[in-house]
Length: 325
Image 1 (cartoon, rainbow, N blue to C red):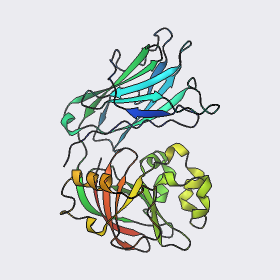
Image 2: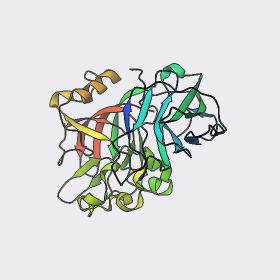
Image 3: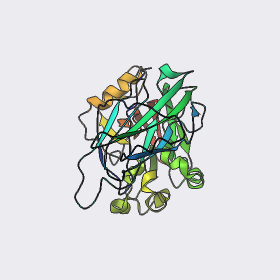
Image 4: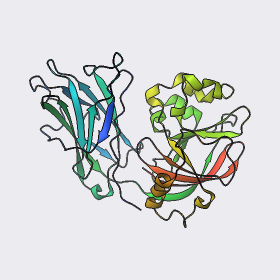
């Protein structure tokens, strides 16, 4: 299993700032949990909304910790950048660039989600996550959270079966982050527990003129609802908030990339398959899929995976290689 570090993926809600990723300097920590380091004169404010206190990750049924961060411009300053690190190799810098005139403002309050998975080197220890917001003058505000780590991702090869909307009690939703294998959710589960929607990396629907099709929830939006008009698409196109629709990108691979232990003995080979493919990444698989098609994919929180389609009809059966949780 390849041990690797997840990049921070801050996602701004509608009307929030747009940020660009690059390597960064880590911010300094001056406060642990009480969000009370927000009184630096003139500096932007920063709050770690969730978790609201130190916590444990690894035994939690939610495999990837979603950290909610609120950044607010200061009285006399604008938000220039946000940096975050875990002191174990993560280095991220997000700067306010690429703003469209009239549509976005540096001074709007913004909420961000960091999908965090601790590295294997942190098992049995406590990780300190540090987040710092800067203004253009260099003033800053820092917040931290301490995370006790009990387990980390594992690499596995296994068979996955996803149903479609025409199957009673279907299991159409896949969360690739469970440990040691991906979790399959039914329509009822994502309807009754909306927090699960943020964990869905891909799902299956039976559509007119096609057999079952694999796609990420982030593919569904108002401009393409007609694609799924006959499938009811599990209420995604009407009941799911945009912030609940994770986007997984798929790449079609050559036939030689069948998902087995020879082609994918470890996570490094899965990542290489995705990065080495010249195919254009899409938020859904090609239409129509065929048995023996091979795909690599990249989830919104940074996990690479690969699968081979074994069977189609009344759902999809596939062999998958993924680093879970």
